[in-house]
Length: 122
Image (tube, rainbow, N blue to C red):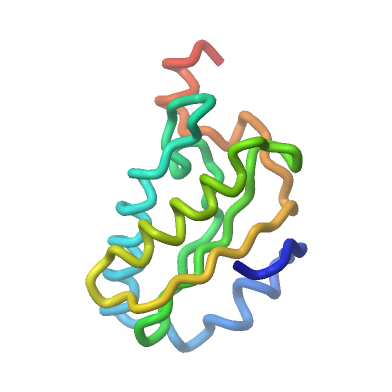
């Protein structure tokens, strides 16, 4: 796992420009689907629907997941990050996954999928 850092627009656009292919996009979609199996144990909702996953990139056989947590003091942070790495690495075509934890943009309940927000009464 990479150290906590900050993400700005150039972090995601400059590194991927020209590297996305239909094959890597398909694998990225599969990684995102696999990430839906990782749930926040306190909320019982998967990390994709919670809006914790900001980006998934695949280049060659390496996946990079950029995500956040609901708060810097999240007691389940290690479990969630480890689960995200394991889920990404479970996808055919991914040999290694790196999960980058970022705090910008900061997570808010508005990031939750609208259907899930409605179910939660937001």
